[in-house]
Image 1 (cartoon, rainbow, N blue to C red):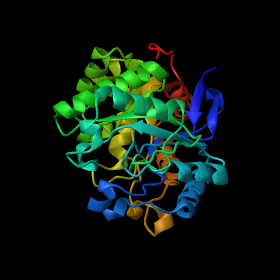
Image 2 (cartoon, one colour; image 1 turned 180 degrees about the horizontal axis):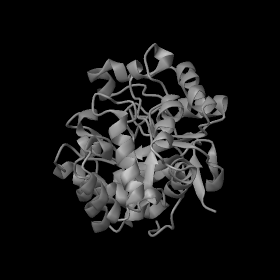
Image 3 (spheres, rainbow, N blue to C red; image 1 turned 60 degrees about the vertical axis):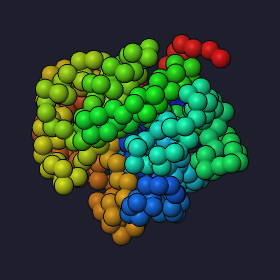
Image 4 (cartoon, rainbow, N blue to C red; image 1 turned 90 degrees about the horizontal axis):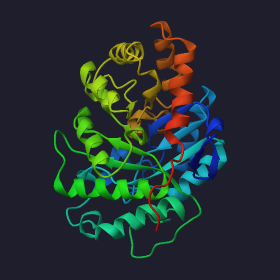
Length: 323
């Protein structure tokens, strides 16, 4: 039995339950909010209301994927978890370049300093102010996953440097890595980078891969040993649910059912029932899972995708580096 690091402390991985592997409960501030007000998810009450929809459908855990200095609200996540009883795994690491100014500290601090910040997020506690500075006040809640992100068909040099920082933090802490791919590109390059820095691909979860519906590409990614994360159910602006259902069934039939996890990534007010939008956080289990069943996916496969695989993917790994 492994351990999963939640904002309320480490839990046995077998108790995690049905898990949404990629979502955003709170986004309090940052460059992203300034550019796109629709992603300003600043209400703890509404986050609780939304999460109750997921819980009522059988959900028991959510991974909140806002990394450092992007509006991560660590105290808010603690309150939401306490009020709803849903496990929340918080995130350290970094996001796309659009979430930072060109002179942001993620690009200007020495590499070792960035690694130390990521490690402290995971082992000491996250900063109450999300590193908006200059004061850092760590709370007891720790991050349980490390994020890394690439751009559309590119890995900028300043981003590759941060991949090294995430890899070093992973090796020092054992916390798994979950990534952002832009339109599903650069997934293989992400795995190659992490392998270059000593990371076992099985500790990497490749996100947003369903933005690129090329089955051969998904198969190639899974063959590296990495987990694949599909987080686009309901996102008809990219593709209908039927396309993702078919892809998941093909991946299971090809023998990769043990490497698939699902999320919903509803990082906009307009996607939230609690803000007057939709489809809301109940969609993943109430609407999408029945589509999987109707397509012939068995209960064992559904349990594996929503319970067993997240438990495995989020479990702390053996620490490879010290000090």
